Length: 310
Image (cartoon, rainbow, N blue to C red; front, top):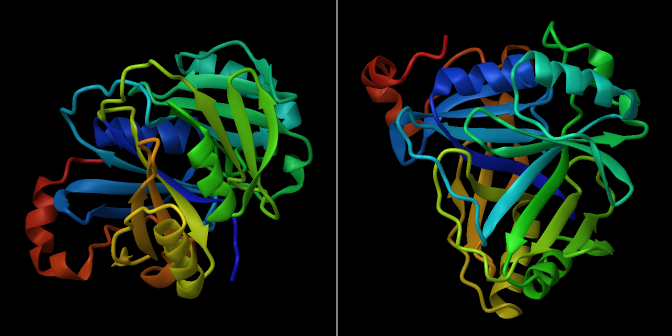
């Protein structure tokens, strides 16, 4: 089943409590899952998104208390952008100011109004004004007015030495098509999806390579409707582009395959199913610590060392 667009974005953060406060209170996203890093169960893995935790709205973090700052460079996601109603730009400008958030003046890109800012770890974010977004459902966090609230991802900007092969992968594997060019940026758009349907490829030859750390995006996950669609994508990556994706890995809420594209960005292919309601009711998402099965016997030990969130 062909489903296009971004499934989720995963980034590295500093202190978990600060990360939770910024994304849930300041930006008004819902905490839809509290779990741990599959490879390091003493590290939180926090998932933020819309009310239902739907693909195309999910931003996740590995927060480390003492991680060094990352360095933006070639082979990395330069910016992660959310959609907001067109009339909400003024509200968000004032909200960012009120919360001491570093931001730029609104600007135009590809005919859209964009408000760029940074989270407490320096991660580059943006709010993009989208006409009609106000008619879409929004999560009410009790502080951000629903009429101004974020409506999932707009897309991401990748900083690359060269854009051609990455554009071909987006086209032939993930169902994107070129939708425009502006200066040194190629816009790729996924048809048939509102959330997470944009990937901008920015050519930046000669820049230093990225260095992972706080504020860095670890990977971008693209949607696969089911296992068969994921397998088709893997086949194309292998046979057409000569890449070597990983074996499928069960991440509890989706099944994943990873591959590093030629520009250096780590891509993931994530299935829509089973979703975040598999281990807690939709109305209780994010309420309790959910552990991968292999760590359940260590719950008391893990809970004792995880940094406090409140």
